[in-house]
Image 1 (cartoon, helix red, strand yellow):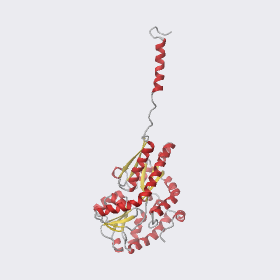
Image 2 (spheres, helix red, strand yellow):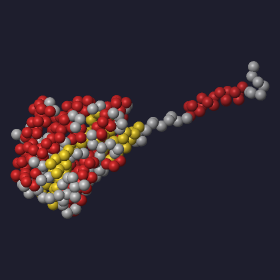
Image 3 (cartoon, one colour):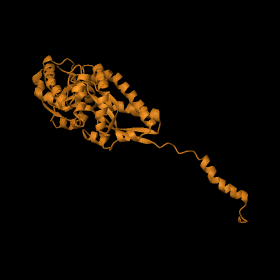
Length: 336
C-alpha cells in the first residue's frame, strides 16, 4: 500500500523522469583521436610541408574526430635512426622517414637513393610506383604501414669552397646521408661520414665538416649557406621520404578512419610530386639571395669520378640488399 503522502500521479511522474532524461539527453560527441607525426626536417622543407598539408587534409575530412599533430625538427624528440625504432615500437604513431635513415635498418630502402639511377622526376616516380609493393612488404617487417611518399629535389654538394675539379672533391670532409653515398665519396677519395640531418649543424660549427650532400631544399631549410657558400648540382640522386603509421595503430583504427587517412595521403602525394620541380627554382632563388655561388654544370671530371664510383657501389648494394629481382624489374637507368 502506498503511503498517504505520495499520490499515484506524483509517483508516475517520478518514475518517468529518469526515462525522459535518457531520451532527451544528446548522445556524447565522438571521441577525438590524435596521431603524432614526427619529422626531423624543418617546416620549410618539402617533406615537412607535405606533412602539414596531410594534417590539414585530415582535419578537412575528419573534422575534430581525427587529428594529426605534426612534430618537426626541434619538436621531434627522436633523431636519426631512433625515429625508426620509435615508430616500430609504438612510441610515436606516425613518422616521415628519409629513406637513408630507414636504410640503416633495412638496406632495401636505399633503392630510391641509388646514385645516378633516377635521372628525372619521371624516372623517380616510375621507380617508386614499381617498387611500392616490395616497399610495403619491407615496411611490414618494421611494423609500419605506408601512407605516402615524398620526393626530394636532386641531391647536390654544398661546400665551403668551389668544386672545380676532382682534386677539390677529394679534399672534402662531407656529410653523406646513407651507406651508399658514404661509400661513393670515400671511393672518390673524400672523407665522408653518414649522418642524419639533425647532426649536421654542430659538426659544421665545430669545423668537422666542410661539405654536405643534400638537396637545395634540405640545405636551404637548415640555412647551410651560413657556413657553405657553394652548391654544385651534381644530381647525385632523387631520394624519397616515406610517411608511415605504426601497423598496430593502423589496425586499431576504424575502417572509416583508415579510409580518411588514405584519402588525405593520396592528396598529399599527388601534390608533392606535382610541385617538386617548382621547389628547385625557388631553392636556387633563395640560395642566390644569400649570396651563394651555384655551379649548375659541374666539371665533367667530377661527374665522371662520381659515376665511376657509383657503378661498383650499386653492384655492392644489390648483393647486400638481395635485390636482384627488384633491380631487374624496376631499375632501367642504373649506372653501367
